[in-house]
Length: 128
Image (tube, rainbow, N blue to C red):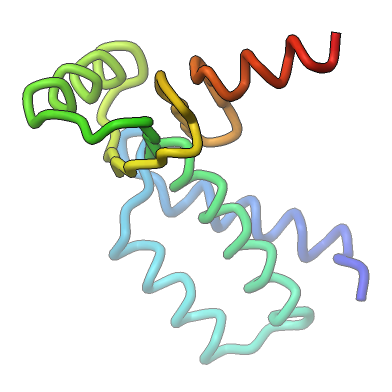
């Protein structure tokens, strides 16, 4: 079912209300979800789905997925996280060892991807 204009607007307004100092406040968000679930306004299921989507997108902006071809040392992992924090503010990082990359790093932060892996370079050469 298509999201109505009214449900979209209300969800965006509620999403903005859940922010404190530019960041999502988990307690406010929880109370907003609880209030919608108990009051059950018109189109409440659509509102909950769209609000969940907005929250998922917002959370992904501050969560980095870092893949490396070889296991990173604790020092190197801290350096990478510090560099990302310096550029993008407070973030959380999740490190993965991915041998398929052959060499280098692949960093995903929200919808942004920085791929410095040998695998991606080989694929680029193959396609050219």
